[in-house]
Amino acid sequence: MSEWYYAEGQQRQGPVPDTEIRQLFQRSQITLDTLVWREGMGQWAELRSVVDELQLQSLAAVAAEPATGFDLRGDYAAIDNGTAPLPGTGPLSASPYSAPASDVGFAGAMPVHGAEVVYAGFWKRLAAYLIDYVILTASSMAIGAIVGLGIGGAASLAGGGSTTAGVMSQVIGALIGFGISLAYYAWFHASSGGATPGKMAIGIKVVRSDGDRITMARSIGRYFATLLSSLTLLIGYLLAAFTERKQALHDMICDTVVVDKWAFTDQPQRQRHELGAVTIVILIIGGILTAGVMVAMVVAIGAIAKMAG
Image 1: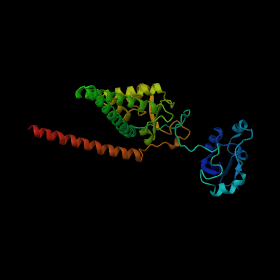
Image 2 (image 1 turned 60 degrees about the vertical axis):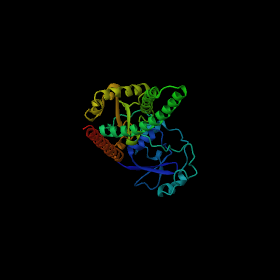
Image 3 (image 1 turned 135 degrees about the horizontal axis):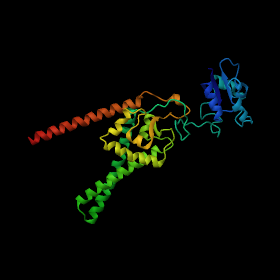
Image 4 (image 1 turned 30 degrees about the horizontal axis):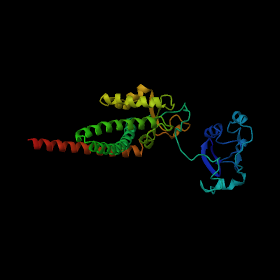
């Protein structure tokens, strides 16, 4: 299998295998006028001159019309020796034909099947949850404090008791926290990336079992299904460590799976089986904090028991 380079704007891309060149051509990311090169070629040549070698005959027949891309034949040397301008500095940096700079594994595209799918195990999901928990707790506390101050001030002006104001603050604060959590998970899981900030950091996403993006209705339903996973003494969550596709109880109910962000894309080779540095660091920090809380509770209980004795 040959390794190929191809020109994109004034940049040299590659090396990539024959199969990826065919995929790029099929998705119209390169054309018959695109310059390509492999080891053994004397100079860069248009893709149309190696159609037979790359087995593009049937695809090239469909794309036989002249392309409207840039003519780079005057830039052989710059492309070949890597002296072309850096991204954003060349004369074509603002061209509408430039390739998008984002590196997104999902981006709302149709799922691609036929390759291995790496499912996110219990520990990756736990690390993502810890990140999301911190985000949600901080935002809920900030909004709850503002609401509490508002209710306390209103109660004082109306001559109401502090007990009533306190109860109202707690009830409204709980409702606000629930609403924020519901909106957070429902919106992010139904977004084009299929992931909350926590899942983005870990490199995983939520999709249907066939790789399709989940709808807002299913995302909301999945959030309420997580309550069942909690009511089963968290056993519903622990199922993710033992089921074949790493599904928790709420995933089984809603026909969803949590997978690597590159699963069901045209680049499945970028999936990662290992936990990754971010996951390991988050789990270590979470473990230290949990151990600290448990020690503090033991000390507090001991102090209370000593005072009672």
